[in-house]
Image: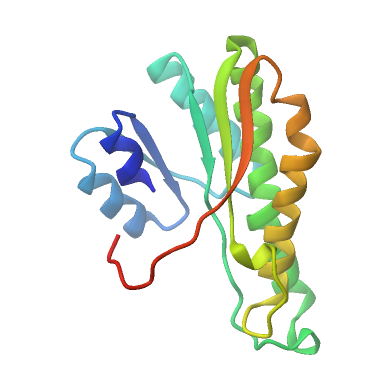
Length: 172
């Protein structure tokens, strides 16, 4: 995702809790990016990243809420611990909400910006082949598009859920 934004001329803040993976992506972007280690489920971290972007660049045009995790505790709801469920919801839903909250804080006054959520196709379907927490969290993001984004999407601001379908035969 970051590569595509940079290819279109954007400066990208690669934000990840996984420092090794985030730095690797950052290095591939040839100076058109910064890496910031961040736990998206912690509000002070998300606020700090948005504040850093504003301080360094003076504006924030696009917020792409792309962080998510699956859990690997089987497909049966009876196998899922509350701790695992809460971790998936915290990262996938609360993290996206915090991204929207802090991006909107600086974007609404400019009246020209976009907040995006990466919603999986699994949020739209019933399947036995995915984690219940992941499916529920991606479905919750669709609710942002319907309800929460109505307060952000006034004027020239946009808030959208993107259901991205990956071609598993391609490398990008």
